[in-house]
Image (cartoon, rainbow, N blue to C red; front, side, top):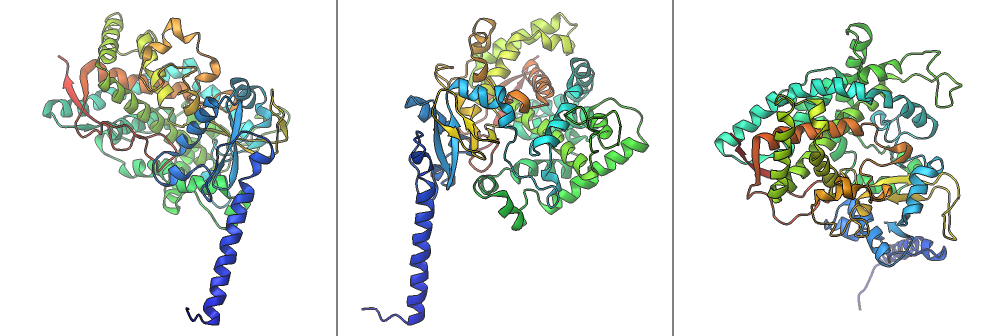
Length: 513
């Protein structure tokens, strides 16, 4: 027999009581979908359906894509899972998905991500903000990406081709392995900076390294799996009381200064430019003609910190999504030389008709290039989830379920785009899925790498153009193969929200003469 002191017995009692309460807490929360007679995947206390995420076996996006595919396999129209203790609704049926993100989007207007502009000003960017303020600002953005403006931007984009190619030449000539993501990020950083911000960053010449470092924190710091978990599982008002932040103070200081300087320069010293920054600068000024989303009230102007938050989003999304898509595309083209050769042949044929110049019209003609990009985005939607919050109780069509107000909904474009019903052999890279004959039979809702409905990515067109320019520059001039440093077994990195291959993509370049 152990002779335990009264204080030890007291502490042991507290531990047993606390453990019992936690078991009860998670058990009770994990009954939610069962009580509502909704199909669900069996959770594990305390992780719910996220055990493999926290064990580092899968990525954040795969939690939901796997749930979708399993529910689909079981023949369900929808179902529920648990992120730790929190119930998450997974729509599976195409009609339900379309209703949530398109037809009835007014009842699912917000992403449910963390936003606290007062204490964490950079969190108040366009992706995070909600309700009327989001609707007002979102309505102002499409004019920045019209076809006419994209043609002008493309002329600016092409200025980055020569410095990019010079760096690629170095790797091709000395035979050293190229870690493509970091170089592609410099290419897209210089493009988005010149086109959208009107500044020359010269990261291809290895200048402004701090800019790249802080740009990466937008994804690495804001959307790592631990912060994602806090945002999903813990009520926002509690996070606010805990002074929770999704950006570091260091990045906040750097970004606020950078964009406040840009704002002041644009207002008082800059020659007139018609670009994205100019459009957002106008929203910082009180204008009687600038109405909110209702069309009746004058829009409340953006504060300097709001301007900085929105522009930081555009900048970071502009360089990251395109460089990631290029990386995944080159990874697959290196693994599929027949696709690479076919693309190179198309590039050479089309460009011969355009004086061997990389022009807007030339790239518009490259149908197989479109197929390559579409198939890459199908397999690797860089942002693999489309989260929504149910604003009011909502009857799910074709079912008996009334989805409760404030329920967290996760539409998984990664799961949908790897659904064998829509894409036979979904793990296989096959650009022919998107040729003229086949593209028309793909359900609209089955191809949504940029989202859909009112919350569709505002910079979709810009991202596609710089991705295509990077691929044309590379495949036209180099034969691309995988270097032995690239791991053969593919696995998504488990530490962040956006899709990234675990281990870098290393390429060999052989110059084409």
